[in-house]
Length: 466
Ligand code: GLU
Image (cartoon, rainbow, N blue to C red):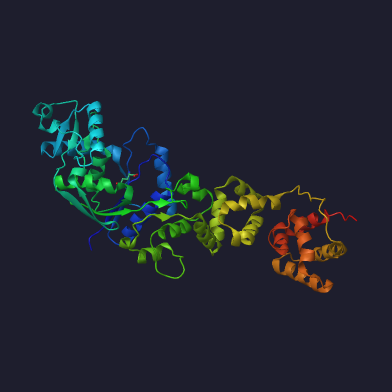
């Protein structure tokens, strides 16, 4: 088995986007499917104006949080400029590239001409390569690659299938700028080649670049990698997934209390199906079953609703409580409340987890249970039937010695039986007395969360009115 060398090559011009995380995930999976493989990270930080180290940190943290481990050494593109220059000069020496001194004005006119006549070759500079004076210059030029006008280039993409582009459609793109800085188009090929990358999995917004980049491999006699261009993900309105749709940065999902396994489960089902009835799938099963060639080539829709479904499933399972406590450690409000009463926080989580989309939803729920100055809304009016039961109920509840769920539930059902009444007559007003709301969990759960003392204190606030 030939080891597969994959890479994820983010530009640190923004935080780790959920769509990029999907690209990284697929690289990681393909890599995990092959025992001798390697998965590298390269930070493509050559755009000095827009690249920032905070973004690099954010990207790496996001990948780490998702568990997408990579090879120790991270390739930093800006540290390899000399190597990129060396290759540009080699291409120049071997006449696969040429010097160009066209002015911006001239290029602009040429661009307009190309735009207006679709049949014309895309070569923007037609004169410099045949001008020996220009080719003898020592400074003040850009280096452009030489792409033939005739013929075509075919690429077999693992997702997109066979794609063919006419050579006249490919421009003589710049390799090295006037200030000797390399372009992305050159750097990416040199860096991938030097890492030994033989499988490039990236967004299909790079498909066009592949045809350009392939010429560099060709001219240098380097082995060209296998490609898989993944379609981008869209929001439910069909447009490119962006902040307008909701959270899109991986670490924002973390902050909201989404679990990596839910995000991975949701992402992997975009354009691929494990072919089983239920859609729950963990990373090990994904690695076992995923086939990149089966990934759909049309774009898929990212659904927050589905993510919530998966997240709810994973936060409810066995390790959910520990993961929740871990989440609390990184959240100021919950961290403080844990110091006040860890058991209460745990009980709230256990009671509410069946309805939670994410851990952050707990933040609004806790207030009423931790409110030491809870004041009952005395304007609320209850039925006469409830009024006649209230004192006896308070009495029964106060008599519970061992304040656990079973005893509380038994006390309530015994009381209902004894008085021969239906639950809502008692339950609804009691829930209101405890929380100032008719909505919420069962009253036994509310009693359990509040504990005996607070429960009885709250019940005692009720002043019977006629
Ligand atoms: N740095 C590029 C980007 O963030 C990816 C380049 C590549 O995968 O070839 O879009």
